Length: 277
Image (cartoon, rainbow, N blue to C red):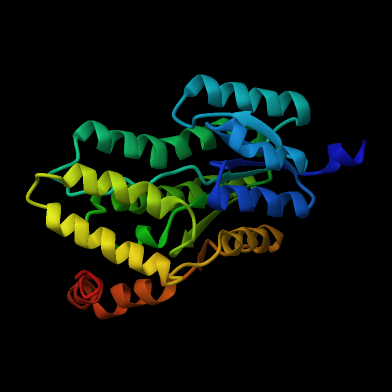
């Protein structure tokens, strides 16, 4: 058996930017055969140059997911490590967001994870080994203004992952939850402009602008951690003989989760709203 055949195979979704790109680079450095999946294949050219195998894949598309997994199975047998990183943030007042938009938020952030997981589990079960890494967020434990649908998906993914862990542990499969704090990616820019635009003319227009201003100010003041921190956290978890069920990493994650858990909702509400001017 060649060295390439002996290597474990990792699949990282949402690898065209931010955390996904850094996770892929880290896993390549750790010696994995790395497949990267995203809708924007051209954005993964740098990963291909470093040795990753890129796949055009939308996690909401059954055919693209099936085709990608089939290619990996043909090349290497299956996926040993799945990193469910693909996701986005839909921000805006509950009253301003359409139900169709909300459904799509769940389709990507929750059902996309489920679709990918169902696709890789048969191989992992047969091998009686494997790791499924789900990127939730500190947003799966806390909440922020105008983030109802985003937080709903992340809270759901937390519970979904816990149940999955109990189901598949009998087959030697680890389910690891990563809860990032504020990370310096395009996440903030992608959600703010649509949020402000969506609120124009609504009763929440001024509130949305205040939230956008506070978020921009936080990012401009260096209010985030580099995405490489999450990549290193995942690397450490995968190297552990018995990984923890949860890893919290990134700016503000631990203190905000602590405040919510131990001081209660009222104090947490005041702490969050104090940042909105």
